[in-house]
Length: 133
Image (cartoon, rainbow, N blue to C red; front, side, top):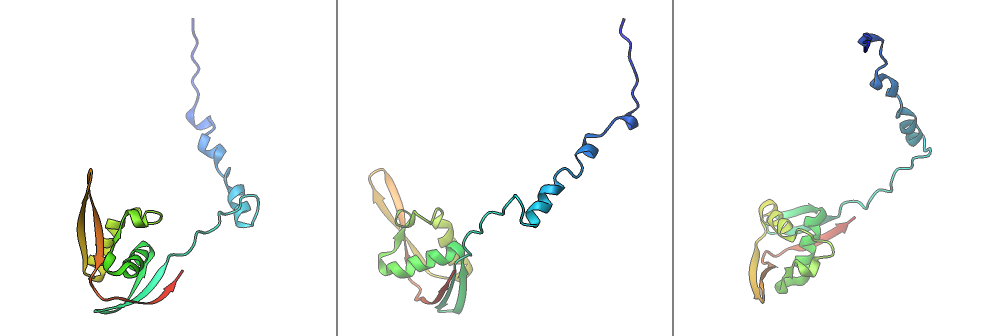
């Protein structure tokens, strides 16, 4: 009833071969400033040069912003809610400041209805020498 035909695999067109080079035009257009514009670069990482008990240190990115917030707030300390617009992981930044830079940062546990939150207070004297973008 049904006839079967045998097709040689080597004679069949390959999908990869047909598509080979299909994306090259778009890559070249982008490199030449063509139709595909590259997205604007986000701002550079924040750089803070500070002077602490161990001497000069350079902090980058969110760690730098966290140190700036701690220095600015002084003995009042800082909570995650107070810096929620930019510090999504304040506890992680505090961890880095403690372990990578040797800063003494106290975690004060503040109880409230429904639980508690942490307030971080910098005890190491630090001077912000320069801030760059």
